Length: 104
Image: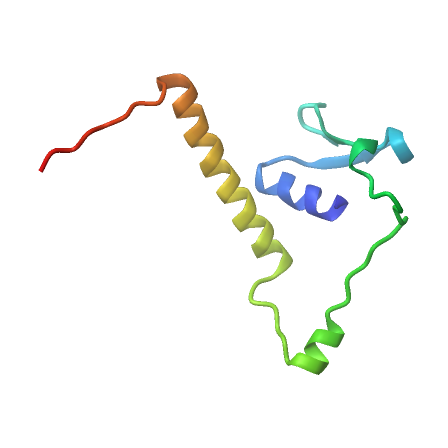
């Protein structure tokens, strides 16, 4: 998750630095000093493990699977999509939701 937050922050022009440890760890934007991410125990799995690492080698070997995009490309797509949604939501909040009727 740390790598994802750092990459997503970079897409938004932020440099995220991790401070603290354990439950006190926070991701802070070094430009603004704002805390971007903090640990919230409500989202822990019941049997939380310290480190989870994925290894796609078995899928490659047995299924011939190959990723269609890189980690960086995936982050860029996710950030771009979320920005589009945030912009739309900002327009709706500012302008209100209007129902339009079209006649033929």
